[in-house]
Image (tube, rainbow, N blue to C red):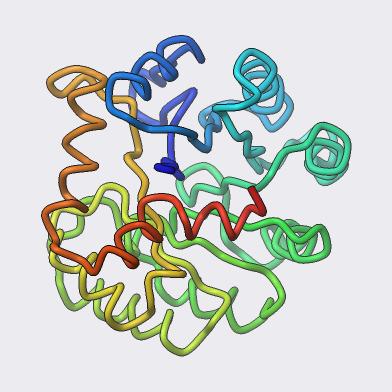
Length: 246
């Protein structure tokens, strides 16, 4: 089973591009993806819940919802996050450094809640590896998925190497392989950390050249690595399935 662990109902690009659940599932069908984790960003926590819940209700066997954690001046969002997970069946939390500070007084309550509820946090750290280490060290009971091997489309091998070293040190760190352009580092991640903590994701949909073509291109990256079949199966879906208890 192929599971894409990183798909956007709403992106964080300048246009805040949205994709409908129908478009996402059509893309998955064309690319050969069985299930996908979906979430919305560039919106409030409440709206992210509404979008992901609608997607899950339309395609309950295909789409797996995450809730987006974003502070709100008018009310705490911890209750909304808790209800999404305990009441609506959401399976994880998405956090993005651009929209949400990773400072202790902002993000630590969310990371603590994730550990208490036994769900992972998928976090785009934007290369802020000091934050990766602080959170991994401070919350050993919370499973933290580091998006993009540390930084989106990173061409600095030393930064990815430092991220891999952190994952070797802290067993609660998982590595999301979406948006990786130095694809040999995905293979290195499997060798150093183990395929059980390396997760395929596309960071799609994108129109390059079209939605399903982009998804197939991201799948081909993993297939081109020549991984051991057991490891390839884990990266392409087994590991995230185990992590989420699918």
